[in-house]
Amino acid sequence: MTITDPIAAGCECCRPRRGFLRALAGLGAAATLASRPGPAMAQAVPERPRYSGLVIDCHGHYTTEPPAMLAWRKRQIDAINDPAQSPSPSSLKVGDDEVRASVADRQIKLQTERGISLALFSPRAGGMGHHIGNARTSLDWSIVSNDMIHRVATLMPRNFVGVCQLPQTPGVSPKNCTAELERCVTELGFVGCNVNPDPSGGFWTDPPLSDRFWYPLWEKMVELDVPGMIHVSASANRNFQATGAHYMNGDTTAFMQFVTSDLFKDFPTLRLIIPHGGGAVPYHWGRYRGLAQDLKRPPLSELMRNVFFDTCVYHQAGIDLLLKVVPTDNVLFASEMVGAVNGIDPETGHAYDDTKRYVEAAAISDADRAKLYAGNATRIYPRLAARLASAGVTP
Image (cartoon, rainbow, N blue to C red; front, side, top):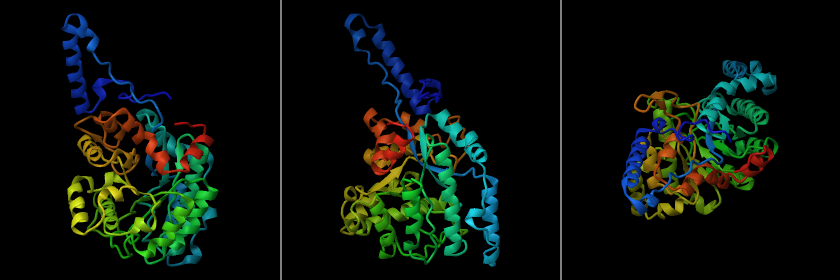
């Protein structure tokens, strides 16, 4: 695999500040050794080889949809009060070249520049809009969205693997989602799904994820052996800005629901990924350990058999904390590009969401880095190996 990422290519000046200073310190140490006579020269330790294996981004969204797809959604929303005018999923027409062009200059370009092999790709999270319309609205929009993800993954199988949107609706049993999940997994080759813990868009009108209300979905996910990423959609509550508040609320709330329930006793093989670095959880790890203890709940180590976090944390100190607090086996590499934060960090000169730079600079072993980049993803998404093999991609 050709690596064009400056860090992966060994360009010291392009590293984050901490990595750059660490490199300077290493050069100073090497110079000291070089100045010693005789045997001391043999004690110089060569720089570790750069990781050159597979890099799987477990958190990618289709945020560059073709205009025709967005126009279809607008027609659907406009027709909510007049269902006879609502477009059918089959009415959307988008050519293959337009699908390729929609990701060429953003996702694929950034994958190449940053040394990312492929992304687990799902519909735009904020666009799921489960609070809009009714169950039929959500189902038709999910079919359109998932079929477009399938198009992307089929046309560019070495860059994208599908993860589906579920047709959730506030107050409607998640059993309503199981047929679309099964279609996406068994017919379209998807390897996972996104689960919105709050389809109401910030009002939390449905029961907690641990409630039996959700059990039909968990049962189907276990049957199909696919994990779910716990990911809210847009905020309909003006108190909660979507990506800065509503997303973090969803992540943190879901974790506490797991702490206070016996969900994983009922579903010991269910695997759920909490994105965005786990929200507030790693920063308040002691709080959650203490609450579990006070509430006579099992220790967090038991919970972490089923719960995983990703690396969508957009600064070095945050990644360092995540990897210090959370077991490496429970963290998957992710960037959410092109997504929540698209700008350039003036302190580093690099994109906030170029999370591979932070993982490269983190003080972890080469073995742990390999787990983060690919090993954990292939373990947590068991169907992924077959998809990689069919595309000619090997870990």
